[in-house]
Structures are given as structure tokens and as C-alpha cells.
Amino acid sequence: MEFEIFELSNGIRVVHKSTDRPVAHCGLHIAAGSRDELEHEEGLAHYIEHCLFKGTQKRKAFHLLSRMEDVGGELNAYTTKEETVIYTSFLAGDYPRAIELIADIAFRSIFPEKEIQKEKEVIIDEINSYLDTPSESIFDDFEAQIFAGHPLGRNILGTSASVKSFQQEHILQFIQRNYAPNRMVFSSVGKISSARLRKILEKELETALSFKPRHMVRPNGYHPQKVIVQRQGYQSHAVLGGRAYPADHEKARVLMLLNNLLGGPGMNSRLNLNIREKYGFTYHIESFYNPYSDTGLFGIYLGTDPGTMDKSLKLVEKELKKLREQKLGILQLSKAKRQLLGQVAMAQENNTSLMLGYGKSLLTFDKIDTFEVIRQKIEGITADDLLEVANEILQPHILSSLIYKSEPQNKHGIPT
Image 1 (cartoon, rainbow, N blue to C red):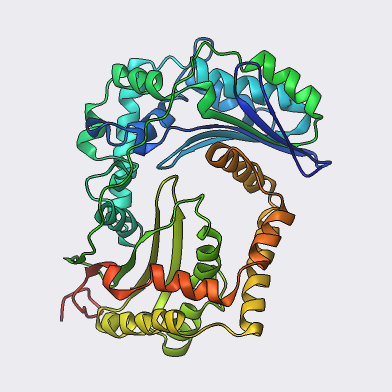
Image 2 (image 1 turned 120 degrees about the vertical axis):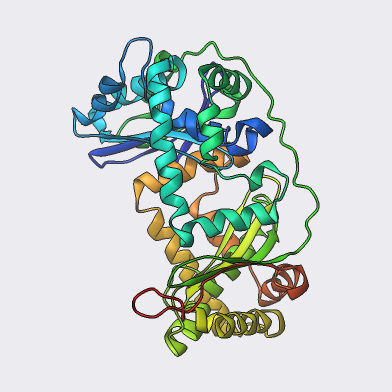
């Protein structure tokens, strides 16, 4: 069997894949991200992720950080718009140590006042570093434009002002409101039987947290906007896109294939071949599809010399028009499917990514598709399906754009 799914007595769902490799991976996925923040809590979910490592009822920060590293393992965490994840990689013999540590962090953190105040400076430095990198900040500014007035439009990191305002009581209120067994999934990939894993989890993941429903507000109406922001720098940056399908939509997988064909990670994507390789206008150009529980975001990013921005955008529009008007031939469609399937298979060779992917899927859909199911769904996509989705998502009148416009500069960085 490719993986097993079961539920603990406290309601936490578990997915496990047994392997013969010496290194194992596991993590706790919590359905609580930046979209669960109240208006005055911008950046709180991410702040809590940092503060979880600042001390528990029985360990100080140093001992938390050293617990897995002392046996050659790694401990990490991240926050997204819809989830918080604590995970670790380690030698398979250390499963009890790994699970006990994750449970200690997730359920018994005490958030010492001195430590959580100190962490604010770390996050503010992270915010400032991000703001100094337009090729990163433009994605969040674009999302704020697409989901204006909605929690999905807020920056996961928050602002310097919001982070400075956080106190211990805010952390505890957010956890009380959002952390619950029914909103948690434990994922594991490693050399251990399901029976032994269940026994360890039942012992270590005991929690007094009660079940809590998740109240997500659907995004409001969407109004396309074209925004230009003047910024200093050698490059201009642009994102073009708009709303897309939610993660469970029947056409989501079709859009994934379309996105991969247009500007996915392959060097042979249409955007890369016809804009970077043919004209040399841009070093980095890509398309992306971010599906959420009840909506989605599709976009195209490029960074280029200020003098070639207009030409680059016209070439992008030309590629979008082709997708809307020209049906893929049998050979083109077959190659696109094989490429995406190969990428999925390659990703599943990375057991860290596999463990995280299993957890996210079970948390979001309450199920996990096997590779065979994924293959069948991708193989079932037709050229008509791609054409239909292209005309639903890529119409010019429903696309927004955000441009960070820089003035052309000479070699000394002086505007010309």
C-alpha cells in the first residue's frame, strides 16, 4: 500500500508511508494560517510559529533547538496563508524523540515574555529584508491587490507596527481560537510500522485542546486593476494575473497542466522559450497557480530591464492569446502531460516533500490521491479542457497587473 491513513483517539488524523530508508520525516500540520487572523492580528500566525520554539513547560529554547540536532536531525517550521507546520528529519530510530519534541512544542509552549519580545526584532529584520527584495515583495503586493480587504490579501509576515504590538495574550487568544485536534494532521514517511507509530502518537500527542470549527470568510468581489509603482533599482518587475479555481475545483488539475505548459519550472516552458531564450529580455520569467480552500490565484511574473518591460508584456499577452485560441495538437498535449507526470514523480522521490504534501492534502481535502489516481486525472485532460480553462482564466479583461517600474539607469546607478 502506498500510504496508510488513520485517526488517533483524540481526533488527530495521521498519514504514514513506510520506507526502508535510514532517514525519516514527520510533521504536525495545523489548519491555522494568516487568513485566520483578525484585522488587528496581521502577522500573528507567523509570529506564533517563531515563538513556539522559545520554551516549553520542561525545555528552554536552547534545548528545543538542540534536541534533534544532537542526534544529527533537523527541526523546522513554516506558516502559509492557511496552515502552520512543525516538522523534523532524523534517523528512523529516533521516532519517539521526534514525536515527543513536536508535541512539546505544539501543546506545551509557554511563550516566555522576554523571549517573545526579543523575537520581534528578528521578524522585523525579516520584513525589512523582504521589502528590500522587489522580486519577492511584488508577489505579496499583487496578492493584496487581488484579495483587497480580505485576510488572504494580507502579508504573512505582517508589518513592523503589527509585530511590535503583539503580546503574550494575543498569542494565547489565537491558539485558543484556532488550534484543535480536528484541525490537525500528523504526517510521516519513514522506517516504522503503522502500529508502532500509532502507539507512540497516542502516548505523545495527548492534548486537552477541544474541537473547534474553522470559520473562513470567502473572498469578496474581484475587480481587475492595473497598478504601476515607481521604485528605485536596475530592474523593473511585473506580475499579471487574477482569481483562479479553489483547490478542490474539478478544473484545478487542468489549470495546473496549463500553468506548467505556460511558465512552469521546465526550461522549455512557452514563456521561457519565447521571451527569455528567443529575445533575451528577461532572466527570470514564470507563471504560478496558488489554489486555496475557497479560491485561487493565477499569475505570471517577470523581471526585466526598464526599457524592455513593454515589449516583454506584449510577448506575454501574445502567448496567452495563443492558449485561448489555438488548441494543442495530440503530440503537444502528450508531451505536456508526460512532463507534468514526470515532475510529480520526481517530487515524490524527495521524502521531505512527500511527507509535507501528504499532510497538506489530508488537511485540505481529508484524502490523498495515489500517484496512479493523479496519473489517471492528468491523462484524462483533453485539449478542449485546456482551451476552456484558458478562456476562463486568461481573458485580458479579467486580468490585473502590478508593475514595479524603475527608470533606466547607467552603470553608476544614476537614472538616465
